[in-house]
Amino acid sequence: MSWIALATYRRSDRLAPALVLDQRLYDLDAALAAGLPALPEACRGGVADMLAAWPQTAPWLREAGPAAERLAASGAIRPVPAGEHTVAAPYVPQRIFCAASNYASHANEMGTVLAAKSQSKPYMFLKLSNTVVGDGDVVQLPPETVMLDWEVELAAVIGTRCRRVTAERALEHVACYTILNDVSARDLNVRSDYPFKHDWFQGKCHDTFAPLGPWLVPSWQIPDPQAVQLRLDVNGEPMQQDSTANMIWTVREQIAYLSTIVTLEPGDVVATGTPTGVGMGRGIYLKAGDTMVASVDGIGRLSNQVQAEKV
Image (cartoon, rainbow, N blue to C red; front, top):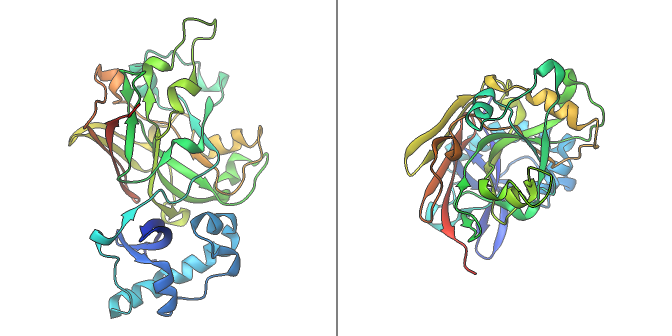
């Protein structure tokens, strides 16, 4: 089956949906005009609407992939010239559920002592929509932190509502996968003025702290989310390299757990945790001018430069 993804890009003065074939963007409206199968009406408002109507979008996308490849091969549609567009975040989710300490190697480098899995459950926290930026966008370095850090993660995007779903059926509710970089201010993640040790909001929820993208890859193209390679480079130097096979709590288990607390809705993102190799474990942190490139096999690369926030 053809590899295809959904993206959003900046076309002139507005955001526009796109298809991605072989890592190249094709304007969706142009492809439809060239003969792509008609898009269901509920899906015509952009990527967010396509996720909201995923039961209609998915079969259309399965048909559209081979059709778009034929149009591209014949020259009926052409890639958007790289100099005429910039990729945006594929959409802005309203809820991002993040898994903490979900790789034993990462827990070890952070000095976190975990209970046995049989005596535990996933530890989740939230990031807000203000944190979302896309590929090529700037990550702001707030003046309040000197310990800005990176975390590459596989992110699952929910496509159909679920509540108290079993782990065995959890992946049926995943529409797409993408990359999320859980940028973290480590020194703001802890507090000494209250009896509570951690402040996830202060450390994780600054503007631009969740680069997302570069696009959304339908779930059927990643049949086993526990067999995916993750990597993150800073200024061209590898920092994180690992496999999702080493998660403590699988993607299935995380979704099942979350659905016992909240009803998961289309467009919700589950960021599934990061492996070893973060800056805190190495004693180095991001500074203005640094470039992070997060990559996930089967998806692509998500690149963001750090700039000092203007205050």
